[in-house]
Length: 206
Image (cartoon, rainbow, N blue to C red; front, side, top):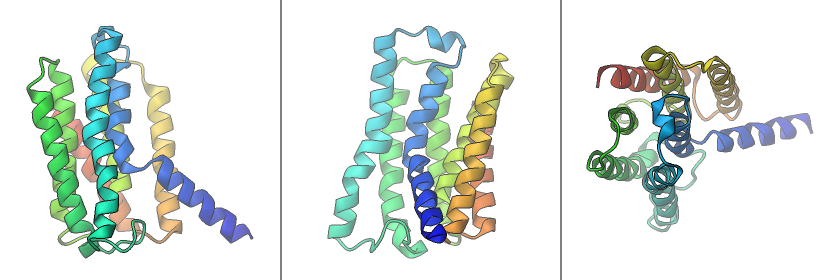
């Protein structure tokens, strides 16, 4: 009974912090971070968020039935490294298309930088997946952590509470993934560091 409850809880946590949610959630934080970016017109914010969610969340989710129909995957949660490659390639292409669209919009540089950072993270995760089964969940959460720290460093934004919550979410998700035996500890740590380093470096240097 206890093991079943733990497994269900771990599964719920893994879905709550699914990597496809992270780009939109990160952009929501960026647009409401207390910096001058927050002064954007609410209608413009909604439009930007819609474009991000469309390209990095809705379109990838729409592709899931196609993956099953074409027998590209036999299961989302326990997909092998080989099964993940083609879906990840398609998701990466969708992220690149979203990035190109963002770069063509007259937006602030930090928004362009963020779109570039998440695309680089997904691309590097794809490349690494040829050899290692890195955790996409932790890559997304590492990127979220990098985003918050970058905002603090660039604008002095008081986001310590949000940073603590993100670190707690990262710890919970990492523990849940270990419990579900979807990744080894090294794949979790490396995935987190990949997302963290790419997003933080891109936002600080771009």
